Length: 202
Image (cartoon, rainbow, N blue to C red; front, top):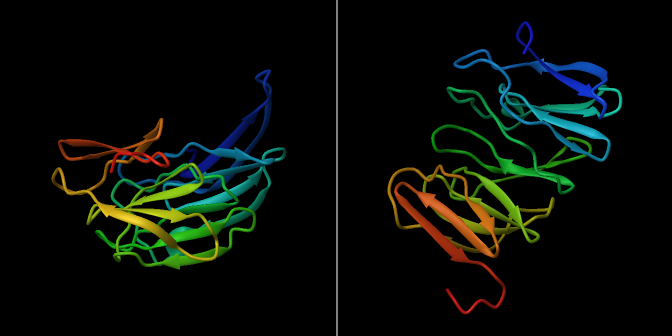
């Protein structure tokens, strides 16, 4: 961050400087500065600022292609430490917005144009989203519900769901998937769920 503005710097593989471009105002509240790691895909760079702005720039020149103020677009509110996130590359950006504690919606944004494809209410809450084996795993941070969702820009289509009941407190820990198992921590409880196809375990 330079003078309140967030910047992306590009270097080639030999360490030669190529360009520097601002993607807008950065977070200047508690612990000021940039928070996210840029994502590079198909000749474009995507970065999400601490103020809630998602920007797409040309990886070759740094010129801005589009920018979306996620908080204004989805009527959200920032949090005490600013926003962060490394976008998911799948033709669309999937995630959840912030409308209060613990309120929010599940959203889909077109990756190329920055167009909002849907904004869906599920339990009227928000939470983390991960992707594995062609499916989205959405974790409600308030109720502990976990939904298996088909990644489509048309709708928020839940294939199946279950509720995490072990542990205590808010469901804020980010889930992880490895070797056919879904790992979720809730408070002092750590759970592993077998999600392999045709598994003989529940």
